[in-house]
Image 1: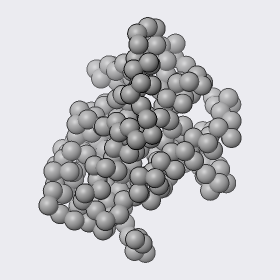
Image 2: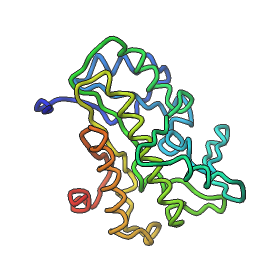
Image 3: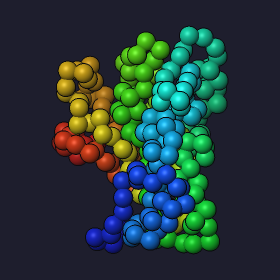
Length: 228
């Protein structure tokens, strides 16, 4: 299927605090509807927290607005590996995405040419999630890979969830942190590794049957994105 020229859609995040109102606004406004992310409604709908479920060692404190990894003990890592394969689906629960579940309720019984979903990109996720010492988990090679595995499983689940309602799917990686790569804060992020993470996530999106896109709300290294 081809997307009609000049079709409109949206990034995903909306200022609403009512999930049904947000969903109806999307459906009434855009050619290609998308499920609304509502960070003002709940901390759990923020970019990192929303996709953190299923990550080994994940800890959240919504009252403090904090999400982090505490790998000080336990068998969570082993259980993750034992339960994971290339077809694993890891859901985003209603507690983390009330906008998604309200949207699904609003589109029941309707059919669309295209629907759009979104997933936090692997760089933004792994650089935005810290360990117990405040260090981004990106700089732990094993945890960085697990972040990628988790996000690919979220992509597959999201595609399976949206597919019954549309002939075609679009899924964007949201990567605002790309505009900061190369700064002193992220000097340890290699271009080659960034390219690999973006490619693998994009490949997972395409393997799920969706059109892959990317969103970066700032100046980015566009040759890197085009190459990816």
